[in-house]
Figure 1 (cartoon, protein in one colour):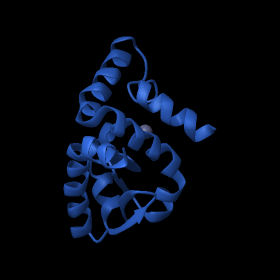
Figure 2 (cartoon, rainbow, N blue to C red):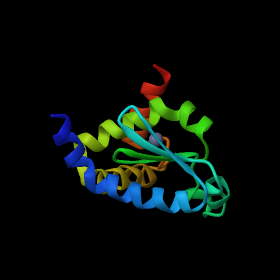
Figure 3 (cartoon, rainbow, N blue to C red):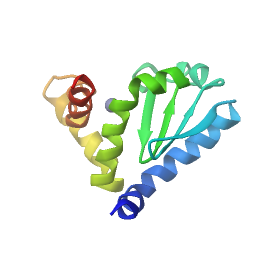
Length: 129
Ligand SMILES: [Zn+2]
């Protein structure tokens, strides 16, 4: 079952690995933690700070690849990001449109498209548990 979960999430993981290669080019380091590859450090924080406001993040997950501004941040947000890993294992590449759709629904309802997104609510709930 584990191999199937990795295979099902692999299209998203591939996106994360490509972004991870970009992070490595910026001086980030990669490490293997709890079945995922984490990328953080180097000039990644500065690169993320140059993104438009709504696109900035301290950490983001793509399948079994997680990018974070630095190793300490990755340690702090690991429980939250690993909820997203489980979501990718359930949804595969469908996670992308499902996540965007949930954000769109919340935006149309006048709610916060990030905090009220169903996938984020699940991650924040697990983080607080
Ligand atoms: Zn999240």
